[in-house]
Image 1 (tube, one colour):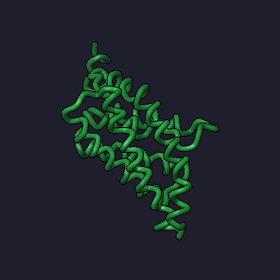
Image 2 (tube, one colour):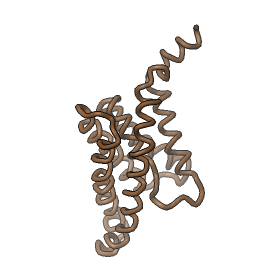
Image 3 (cartoon, one colour):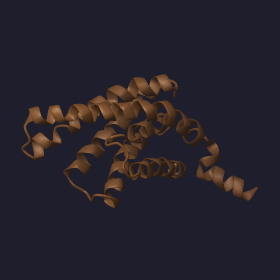
Length: 173
């Protein structure tokens, strides 16, 4: 429970950025926010951060559909993968990039299959359409993993003052 405030801050960062009008498509910070949280919150916390980040966002914006569950599970699993990757590694820009870029490509490869599996789209059309989408997604991951991930890790995830117990202590003083 002590990390709830931090989760809310992380989800709000993703949510607010994704609501920016006219932002480039697929230029979003979800994985770059999941990664710093995964170092600190274990397998369950890492899965829930990614999974609930998508479920809550879709609940407020587009509503739930097949895409919600596929993308939520994928981001949850990326959170689990990030937890194991960062378990014995520093939360550095280099490591955020080393995990983030292949993680983004893996995510886009899996989610590309939504069209062919659920909507009868041909695999060739899905693949060709996915190329610019993935390039933009990787660009976003590089930008956010370089700027946002280290800042979130330092100022939110590893900041004990943001724990509910730390908040209570500072209010009492």
